[in-house]
Length: 238
Image (tube, rainbow, N blue to C red; front, side, top):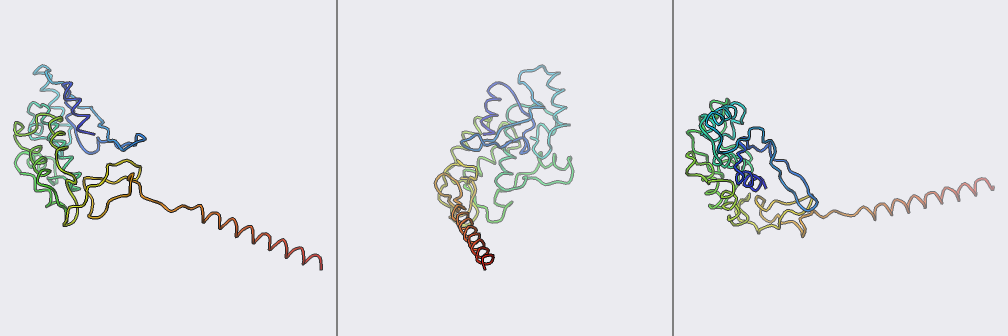
């Protein structure tokens, strides 16, 4: 959903420049879970003047999120849609592994890692994690240091990600059966799950009904009340 929203922005010549997991807002629309892309506070329109572009790029370098910055944004270079692609690649890496590809104590160290260090393989970041080579290739291309080696825009990134066979990643030694799509408030992710954990139809977790228990309580309470009334009657009639 984030890539779809970003693809529409890129098609309109709009760059987000601050993609991060905190800017994805998950909501239930009555039919399925959706993730909305928020906070276009550092937005830039492609085709602006050189002076305006330089000013906004400086703002992005100061107010952006270092853990998600592309190498060119970290160095204050002019940005295009491929900078957003890199940041989305970081978010995808985080969703799969539970952590960023680069860990650093300070902003400068984090930016240096984006510039010089290759992202570790996905499986090295989470014990028991297994991923398809196609998914690893998609993430690796999105996180390429040179922007001309990345996807040109979010639309290309989305198409490549949707082409990865499901399940794309799982915990365990054997690939589980593909799960149905997320359709309920208590839903199951088809991307990452443990072997054998396939939800019932509809994606909802079955729950036991409390009606029989409630009826039993009412009946027992009624019987106890009747017994008390009968006992009281015989007590006062003696």
